[in-house]
Image 1 (cartoon, rainbow, N blue to C red):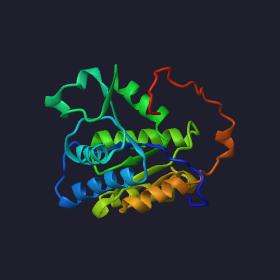
Image 2: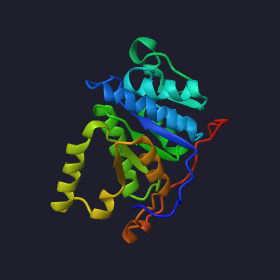
Image 3: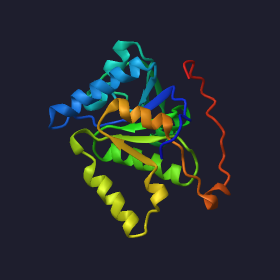
Image 4: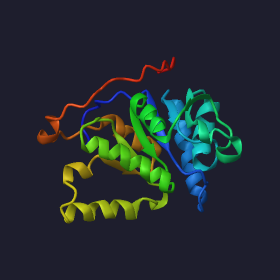
Length: 212
């Protein structure tokens, strides 16, 4: 839901494929996202190495001067698996630790085109928003209509009454990086009164990250 600017974005967590994908526009658009992060002085958090689309956005952002942090499970911290870590690196024990660390320190989330890992991450974060664990904005960079069928499925979920229309609005989608960040910054969550009665623990990680 759009409104007046209400969300100060300093750190964005980006999820994305470790493959460049089939269409050249995927990599071009993710490289452009990295440039936009630099222009807007936004830091980048990520949970993979430098392969594929994820590599495109993080290398562009890093070379442009944005601070970049890779949060990686120790078991995957091998260049032959995920490529070289760009920027700062924080190793954690498990995949759950990885997502929790990115969740706690990011102000917003963007999903590039990707596979099962990308889908799992974006839906995990979105389900937490539905439960009012957080109110951070979530966006899909819908390059060449990559997420059109997924968005249609969510609309069908609303029609079949498995998803409310307000919950459907948690996920923002556009093909343009500038527009997507603008919409993330102006996002105003819709508060579900029944969920607002739930009180979640808000203890922050004690891990010190000097640029956050």
